Image (cartoon, rainbow, N blue to C red; front, side):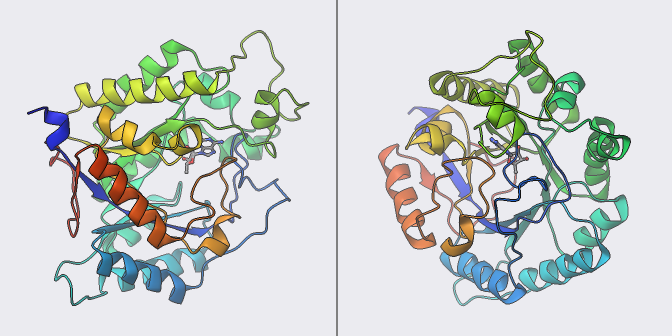
Length: 340
Ligand code: 5AD
């Protein structure tokens, strides 16, 4: 039998905790300079309710994702939240929920604290492994900005995560402006050399309320490097094809790791996640954030599922996976090494 058709995908319920962010990344819709969105932070009770839903429904794990914040109150709130999620119980399973954090760069101490509170995994994308490209997609206005968006600091954070004991994930955006094929080759080398356990990588989707988005959409940008002939713009078809190609290449190279089907793929194609699974992805992160909040968490435009609720997302997913003959690992934490 075709190996790909006997595979299992594992689920993580994605909870978008907060869109408050101290960073100002030129591509991201929740960058701190974007005044057009309403900022929110989900109350703890609501996150616990969503996590309980994930546990009872057999998702196996949750991902807590949010903008980057470092104040000590926030750090403490996350610790308490992680602890409480880890101690939720259900009639339907005796296993605790797996917890993945995706909360940006933090100090070594904070990473340790959250790990000790019960977090299992951490996702920190390198975004672009070529330092030159990384610099072009991040602010460079003044020293403070440059320091806050430092490539070296990001590498250091990834190393801190590994030494804190997390199952560590990284990844990048594919088909970024200025990105060349050689950069994508380099990205694959980077993931292999970092020996990551998980990868989340997906297509770049322009957002009109960001400098890079404006540049990509042919609008007048501010705060981005002038087009010195280096600027490349990819079509939707190219972005889709490149993303799937990257998944295929990475799966060949790293057979045991977890590879997530990026939500951004669904902006390009309705069955984007299914195509990613057929190309080698084995993790899907259905969004379980309450619909009312989702419209304020648009990292990129046209983000799918904004109108759906958790239950319809789940049904759609089941049908999609059934169609391609892939099993869903309900009630399974789905740690790396289980790809078959
Ligand atoms: N297009 C695609 N992905 C994006 N992200 C942020 N902005 C965009 C965009 N415009 C991704 C980043 C980040 C993740 C949470 O969302 O890679 O790590």
